[in-house]
Image (cartoon, rainbow, N blue to C red; front, side):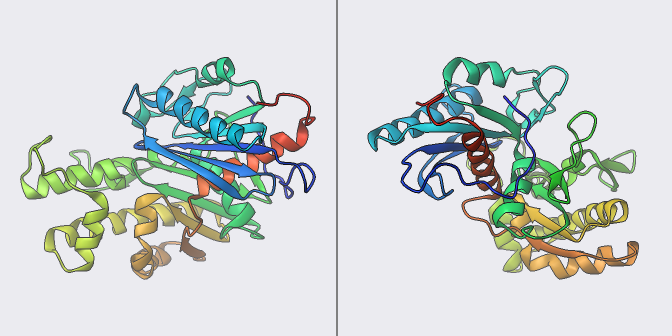
Length: 327
């Protein structure tokens, strides 16, 4: 396993090389894999639930195995694998940590992959990969400094300056989910950003406002549906989305005040759903910063983490002799 930095050039191999790379985004709810050629074009995908059939580790290995089989059916050797996880990789131990959404705190994902892969591989925080994807093919391409805020099942962030990730002493730079924000929903008057605006937080808030008990059969809140309902004027959904917008604006203001980036990219299922509310976020955040940057929502397809993982896998393939580690 290697911790890589971004590069301007990601292509690997000659034009007639039929080799492939594998990229995996292991999310809190979905495991999404992609098989790509050496130009970075996706040729096959695999999508499965993270917590079914043996949990995250089984989902990850199953996804990789399926994509390996797809490549083999095309007589295409796999040259490298890159995996994004919703956790930090502790630089002291190599263990995944601070990943509550996949219950991987202390899990040795690197050893797991080393037992099953004969090619170079990399394990990286999923939002760091998303930022790499943005710098390569997304809204961050050609931008000197930007911040990616991923708001979905959980909340994370990544900081890119002069084409390089800012990692921090514990590989935890950009972990904005820990940011304390003011709120009347907590007895202390403050709560973590992740506890206020993540998918899990939105589900809990809908239950509370609707008087639902946790686990109510057939009545679990759908986060995507909350945003749809808010757009149609549903009062409860509008209240929840208004609160989320306010929390995100405060987080954006904090990031801008500290880093003064050229661009802020909102990513994740919730971040992308905030596209209709960007003007409201600006109205709330701009008075609290010296200069307000462009704030946009991610438009990369299938998602920024997959694109970033492809970029890193291509880098590994480029740096490894083609005759070494072929599957």
